[in-house]
Image (cartoon, rainbow, N blue to C red; front, side, top):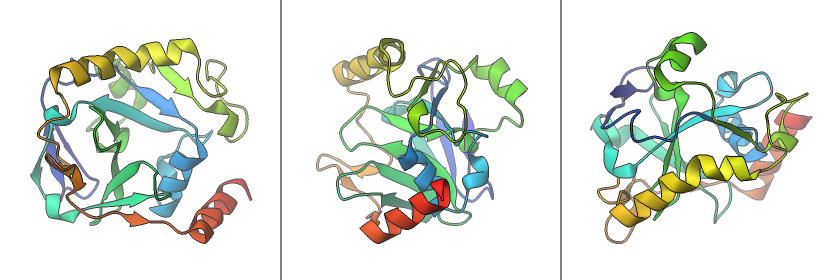
Length: 200
């Protein structure tokens, strides 16, 4: 499958998709919300502040155009690497350097509606971190994590570790796992400002 940022300058191809993906997840945590507020793309959040993520293996995700436009941030010195297209601020993915996991944001997918996403990928498998949601989250959302939420992704991660799916990583240089684009680390004040925008 081919995916791209909103303006089309950053493009990528995902092999074995959606076959080698655990499916759609939604996270309501304040970090994911802060990330989209930082990019001024909070319109991509759902009504409760949720971010839809579709995990894929690093080895399956390869940029085909515009990788020089990809930038990253971290909300704290040890936070997730969160990548975006600098041309149009489209959020691309969340990653950890050595994990066989790219949490691709659904904004990269070509589907134009919820109906199209559901037809292609099925229903949302898991909703997590509902304690940080805006308003009343969906009834099936976990306050943080429940066993069923781990069951949605743990087999995917374990298989990726065993079979080396974190090799040929699109965001990191191997074998050092140094980021290909050095991320900007937000200051504590910047983080507080973002939280104020979310919760007032």
